[in-house]
Image (tube, rainbow, N blue to C red; front, side, top):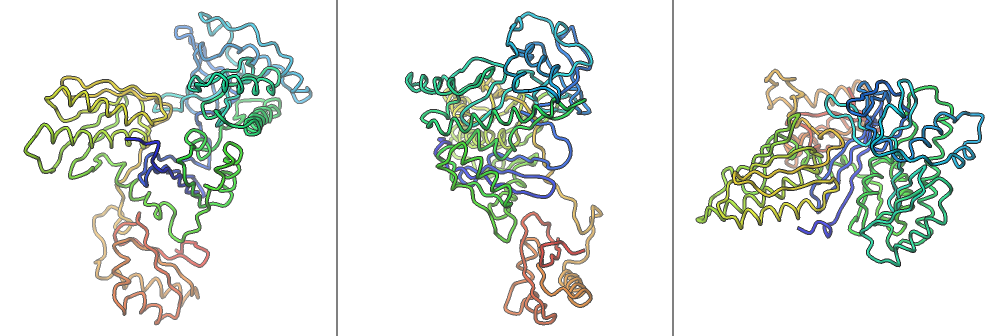
Length: 520
């Protein structure tokens, strides 16, 4: 399955309390994430000023307070080679100093020894600059590093470093030399960089512009550091929208749809910086129906995040997530068996492998994953299934390892876990019965809606209304020449537009005014 050649669309749904992102490959939901716009969040890449709380000599590590209810963890090996430079910068920063002069004149040495001890460099109460590399999961706090880096599309900026490295995936020696010389010539003192594979062939203007923006982002945090008296966020990585674009953007990325003008402009500006020729792929969505409904994302979420995941021709997966590992069971269901049972089993397992690779990305499942495929007798089929799974997982950004099937038909997959698994409860409480199991007779629903319409038009004087209903209730109200909706428009002399919402339950309905506000 050549995923690279499949059209990719990013759909961004901006709401008051959260931003939801859906990555579609060939109109099929592959990745889904949510970013809260309210309250404290602890995301990979965020940089904090933290306070050392407790040393753990037996683990050669320490707990660090970054403001979360769960104390974060940093190991000695995550302090980085030039921790002493970061430590001095934190200690000597104050509002009265020239921070640029301070930064550029701090010596980088001595390099931390590989077999050193955390207690030689950390003390309880000490303020340290740290970056999240793994988000809080279950009872565990964030995993931290003191080796700060700022990732761009083409370049990763390394404060307090002196080396410029080039991606090994760039084959041309001439191109490697060009990129290294270019970046080295424009890097200020006490900065290093990693040149990513995406930089290959990029002109100097794009690389210089991106490098300057990363340096400016790092240096803009200095004033906050100098003024800070306690624990707090210094700066965040890019939003999830731009992070996905930074890691995935390529020629097959055809569209980025955003339903908010401000976020659309922010996204367009980011793409103009990292890949100017693709700026036109960002499009503002102005449709009447919700953006996730328009692109069929809502339905795919509902069908993909349950415990049981249906697949082709009656086959299905059962997915269980525990503290220790994730378990996926493959079932052939009611699928009609062919005369060759072994061939039929192999076909079902291949269908399951495709869905499993998708589910791992979609739910961002990390740690150990055990897959119980249907038993196959032929060794060739087991080897072919293993190779097929490796191929399907090749487009997964998370670090992973796939092991061959055991004699019991089990496949072990390890996948990098840097954030909690995405869980969505697809079971809904009925908004009409509120869990009681009893609702008003469905025959009376038209009368109930008309009473609400009468109240809004006659009593409140609102004459321009939108009625949002489920896809099942919609046809019932609009069917026929003399439908309920036509009758209500004539009777109450009002404008009434009916919109079907795929996420609504059977008889759910609500009225909106001209401004799009829900009427109570």
